Length: 257
Image 1 (cartoon, rainbow, N blue to C red):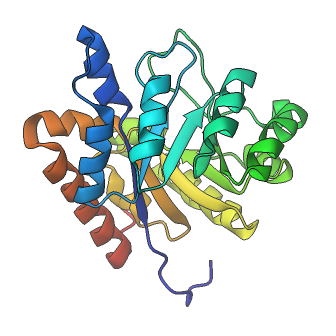
Image 2 (cartoon, rainbow, N blue to C red):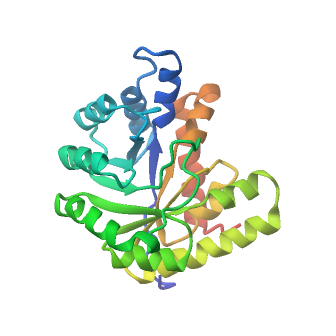
């Protein structure tokens, strides 16, 4: 990105999966993910993210239907590269589809998608989604091999997995955090040079968000678990507003560390 280029806006996508996790712990209808999505919109979110997992451990098919009906914000539909999920996405045609790796035994998404190894399969998988008008994003590690593969298969967006950086920050491993941030910085710049839109997510907190928000090539952050956790103590509106404030301050000041 040229040094004299205008500052790009930074969007905040709020992931409401874990509102559904709390609901499902007891069953019934509350708390309602759609209500959380509407509150997120009022608090300043630019989009809503929901991951429909194969085992339906949190978000359900009914939640996706309700979100599509109720939202005025764009829906970012996270999903694995399976025939079932492709069919659901093609039926609903959300604004965005983010392809993520998924294993039943994992607690959360543990890494980026292995695009280079599955390039031909993924190219054929995402083509109908793009043709249906969905913005296709690929969730990957900050690795040039994976970025090149995502570019070749026709993805318009990559979302960089920032979990290793966030873990290093939270555990006060400053040297490792610096190394991870340097890698993310380089790969965000590289992906942007290829014409890919760059997003970032996974594990961002108030403590770790500023350096990622300051990366000029990154135009969207997707944050969920932390915000839902903070909402228990602060309420969802102030939790999101504080994240928005930190993101905007970092972006406007160019804080990199």
